[in-house]
Length: 370
Image 1: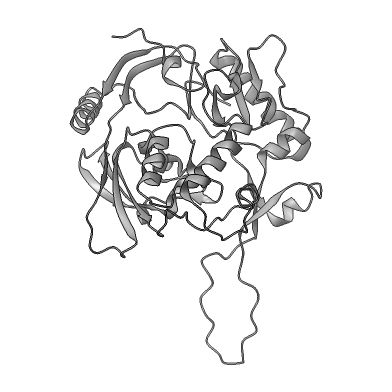
Image 2: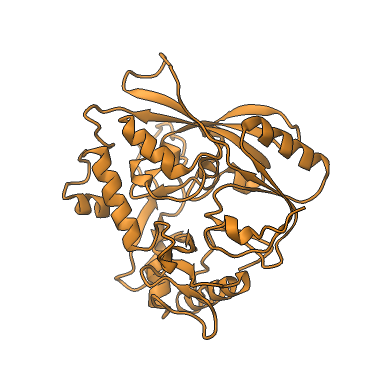
């Protein structure tokens, strides 16, 4: 039994206690705790860094397994290309600590993901991404303990159905990630992967596609994230959040045409153009991307242009929109989960009424709904 509130283990700093809290520091402890909990048939929750979780004020009536396992191992794999390395990371390893380690080793591929809070084991669940890099581009496999069979196996990344903030784990596959395997590149002279995001390229003073020092990329990304309140800082209430609270919606290109001309939109899927075939020619199969053209919209733009400005809060509430970024809901000190959810629901309603778009929350909601 424990009376430790889960607010102390989450970056949003809300949530009551768990009925039982088990902290595991080794892979073996994690396996044992998970199996014992599953065998008891009581509710369970895996908690890593707590950066993407909102827990109800009533807490969690079950067992919470807090994963703080550590370990980073660079594999000796002669089957990889000479400039690539396989890295295996314990699920509880701090993600940003891993990024810092990779830079110290001269390994590229995750440097633009600097400053993202949370644990490494949670990264494939969410398929984290930022500034032109996404975990799916470097993830090789995960070591997984299955909830139902209790078997441990390595699942290739190709079978994880990784998408925008999505994976097979968010589609019903239950269990625990034990280890994450990545393939990172070494370009020599501690150079980064080619810069893929225009905002980052501009901040670095280079063209998209250029390569710069890994440490410089990290420094610049941290500055960009800090300017949006997205780097944890105990002295800054704007960082007491779950990061981006809503996902950027993906809509059809036709729907997007009805939005204001200045609404940002980014193509995410292009359909194959019509082709003219000679008479009698064999008709080729349709491309796997067949369907309407899709575009990703900016949730931050939608929120602000629906009338919810930076710094907004419901009168009397201690939850508020970040003063730096409309996509973050922050705990200004002593906020409850109910206040956070209430503000999120208000934002959702404003965007829907103005643009006909429903924003979906990005964090895991435990005992609450938006």
